[in-house]
Length: 146
Image (tube, rainbow, N blue to C red):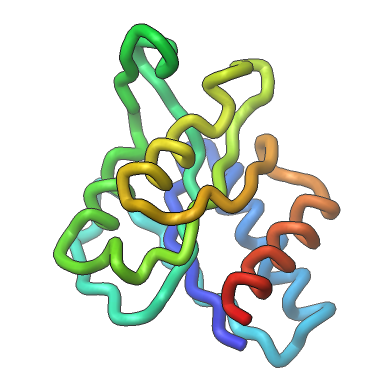
């Protein structure tokens, strides 16, 4: 099975989690292929032609995102990329990451993307995630693709 992922990684946590997913696939599902594409401010927009999952951390600058607004920071390039052309039509769902210390703001960007692009909010993990997170999220992606 082919699994496509779009992600952004500011501190390296999301990138590390994607690498864990790739390692898991190699060890447990060698017939699966994970194609991961990191999106940053420097990347040009492309037209996505295949379905994909989105992995996005939360970084906010101002507001709490709940009752007094929100200003997202550093992940905007990914949101703009998804919004480009018909890219959003290929999004199968969003997985969020963050730090649970931020309470209601935990994975807020992923929740907002799911709402904005009308796709499922699939799961969350904290920081670089655990092996249980990897197994659970990998299975979630397989379930969506089934």
